[in-house]
Length: 605
Image 1 (cartoon, rainbow, N blue to C red):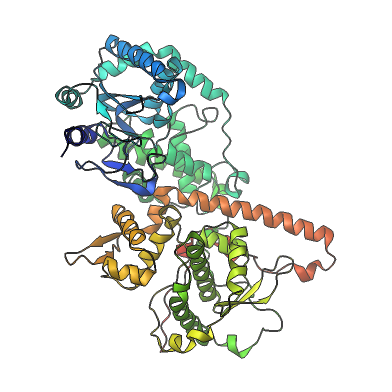
Image 2 (image 1 turned 180 degrees about the vertical axis):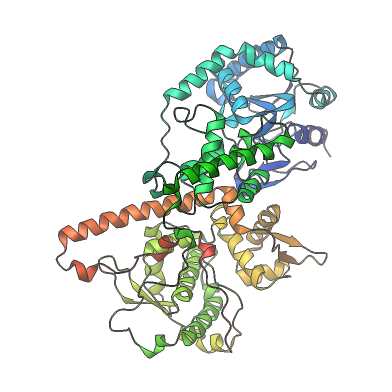
């Protein structure tokens, strides 16, 4: 190993675990441009081959060190040098010890290890205050509880080379092992007291207006019993950011979150799990001022207050809980000319047909290239299959927006894919009737003649057919297809997965790496992969914050539906004919993630 690489590996192994807020690291596979959450891994002493940034904050919303990132792209290398010298002088004045490294492009990092972990709010205030003094200091790593991360000494750099220490490794390791005391932290805050007060005052002047949704716009924030917390409360629990004009302190903010959770029907154990597993690090940070053994008792006391408040305000407990509505009543999926057709009058026969159609889909998938377009069309077809199982009919009148929610695509993109799919020579779907008014296009699942015999002879695949489950909005379509293959056929090697999924070996290998990093799949001694059944896809989706994207998409489509109905009522005479009696896209009615909507497996004899 070359000397430079060897030094980088030693620095990484010695310092990264001590500086990180939690033992997790994010890799950049696009040459240092982004560090996406899906490429997060367990932090080990082995030097990554890609640019790697450790997580600054832990699951409890606290950090073990202050990360100061001086960016040369802001005002040049000379400015960085001047700001670093000024900060080092200030740290020395406060009695602090620090670790310093530099990037190949002239940027500098200064790390201030802390003996006592500090909360997200405390760290953010200090770094923002210090950033107001020094122009080249990037404040953003400490402004994001969920995604704040930074490269540590030894990490590969996007321009080549590594983050190199500006001191000996022995000295840096000694500082990391003997971090700054609580007294030093107090001295740093005392010296910046004026700037910190200014930062907090500026935050009070800034408006904080989360995007309204039906759950936040129709009732006091967080207190509407929808079965799901309002987006504003969920965001507060997730990020630790709150409107300082509404809540005077973290105590009031956390009480609002708990009241919202109780009103939404969550149990105390649900909240405890979200805090302990790192799903709600923002809420956890609000309790980090307590010693660790006192945090859960404090949470339980606050929960009791929230429950008492709701008992005294019974109006907040009433309401329809759409999240628990079972999709037993679906919109009519057949036009007048098809209703009563013997083909669709027997639900068992329809489900048998749909399973044969699924066999045809498996046989035809090789025709869709491993491009973004091809993968998206495969997922649209799965969404149609799931919709058919939901209604017990091969005829599907779910609008483009329904399929968009189920696939994570834009509805205009879904429309383009459907037009392309029905235009194929031997298609899997046929357009029966074009949509009118609020009624969507009516499609029929079709078993292509070219594969009909093979599809009928092929054994039906057990289990459900899924559209894009929410967690894969973050992890990607290839990972969704790999996971699906392992659900149906556990114990597959990488080579077998390549054959089954019709993906390249590179795509399959990268997907397996991502899935394994989140404990969704595991490999045994024979190098065969299987799904980890105990890992909840729903909890991971919540951890990634994906449900916010789903909620935003649903909210957008609700508004568009209302506007479209208003336009029809003003401009179309035959309104009664054009307005569908049921929901235009029934996914919207159930308020839950797509993986909760699939029917249970149906057995036929």
